[in-house]
Length: 186
Image (cartoon, rainbow, N blue to C red; front, side, top):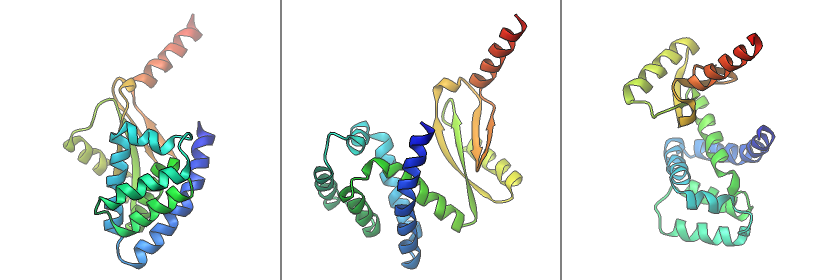
């Protein structure tokens, strides 16, 4: 799974970097980031759309036609629209989420921010998210943007990844550690 993810990141990085450079040159970083966030939300919220993007059974030409039809009916940022058309034409829609994540990371770095991947058993409240962001900012010394995920299998607690550092205080991990310790004793 990690190897597959690194391949996707390798595919995504050039697209994200090119879009970032063009958006920066045209002073459209904020609007492009907002439009990409909207596309990312659509991918996360629509299982059908996510399956469509990843399906190897649908050829690149058909996907490109579908993306063009969708974009013709929307008011998305022209740079994002061009990126989506290019990615569809090149048969790389399966890496769209990684392209969006890579662009957001570049935009955050340009603003002097660090992105923290936060996974919790239940969605964090606004107050919890703000408190966590402030705590991480104090530790890191930079503004921290939270990229939140929900994984009910954690039971409770958090998994926070900032850069290469992972802080895992989930009950799932603690229970697994207890299980291993009990096997060693018995």
